[in-house]
Length: 511
Image: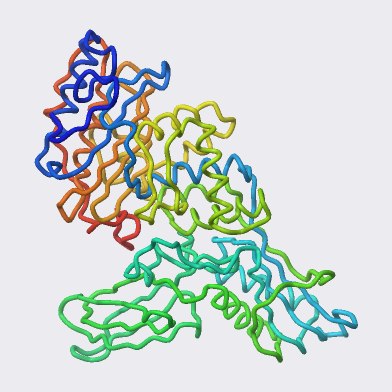
């Protein structure tokens, strides 16, 4: 029995839904086995909510604390991603433009007599190569000199960069990057607003290590105190409020670290300005913030991949910046305000319309510990989404248990391998210190479609007890209504230690 379990109203006993006392042997056996799994001593001081529901009939097969609010961590992204597809459409693309402004005409031969404006709408997939391509298009117009300024227009969103409840010690890292309508990513994981720092050994033991940054940029300053040694113990940190990145420790083998930048708007503008210069376009004025005036002339446009494709790195790798950018984008579309408040109102309305009766949203990603969802709400949502015309696209973005391919298995690639759940469970993970979550879909041994949600808060172990989630998921894959299975005897290796972070955030090894 789950120690300290608070029974849901109408529930006949721990994990037993109302009316289930005379359930088929398979259901009773399932209840017994999940109760046994949840009796693990690591959960003695924790709060745990679990719901298992038949997606075919809507029947609750198991429920403990179904209607209690839990901190969901990245299970928040189930709501955000689905609301984004519904609101923006799977074909939505982000647009980044270069415009020219002038009171007396934007062009005078090879010169722009006014300002050059870089205008963004939040594209998290913009790479240095994309800014280079925009610069090449400007140069291809025959422009060699801009007499005015380079104006960075990030007004599609507001200027609130970080979530209100995000912890200060997460701020230097790629998974807590600042949110802006103008940004850049170092690679095709699309960690918007970050750079990759690579530390490699030098030529001599005890000598200075080598440090490089991707993309190449002068926007960040590297203070290199790392030395070449016989082992690798490197620490990379960005000083708060600056773009000074300090590297210390010893390195024997290559070490990569992804760090957020301070002010991604100016980061993107810096990359664009550097690439303009590479293509022979000189901007005489400074880089400033501002809004493109009415009537500005478009010189170049870049469009992102569609949302249907962005969902894959977003959900498989649990990308927080994608969640927040999509949240503000929804707000901008529905109410003309690219703010957290406007976007969360859209997500909340969508969630309530699709079975989530109780919720508290503070961000789109789940980094906030003030977010609150219920297992009952999540399972009701998962059932409702199956009727959406875009469901197959969205479902395909969920991590797949035991699939070793990083971009298919995602945050579940190392879990439940060689079990009935492998290739079967499609679910979203969630991890913060003291928080773990797993919610998604599985087919039983009879082929019955099931949905489940497992939310655990306030456990005391440093690493989350994800092996218990896995045992429940495997047991669901073994479930038969008519035949008991000794699922409680299934023993799995736990997920790789993460120290309370999503495994995909721990690059490059990760999950």
